[in-house]
Image (cartoon, rainbow, N blue to C red):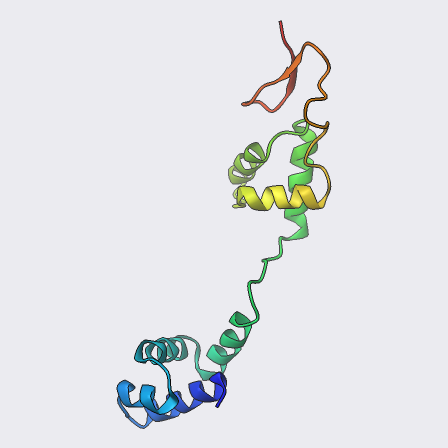
Length: 139
């Protein structure tokens, strides 16, 4: 018996008023698992829970970022002279867009613009300010 069939059997038995302990023995799963199934079914309905269960078993899904947000990240990056990801996250938060630092760096890496210059290739007399993310002349 596959998992989807077990879930359907557990749901049918519970609808008949059978105790969860008996259902767990019948379907060959732990009592906590059956309780988790029934809770999910209660929240989503039987078909909704099975659809959710199948998607969860396919592995981790990376959420897609809307193209507007990708363009906004890149435009902030250009406007602030190749600033760091933390500043981009801060500026997006000011606009009401919540995006994690790792997502920002993933987007930048995907667009191949994580670094304006290779590390260590600054002209002499120029250093990078950590806070402003801008290139400035040192004294």
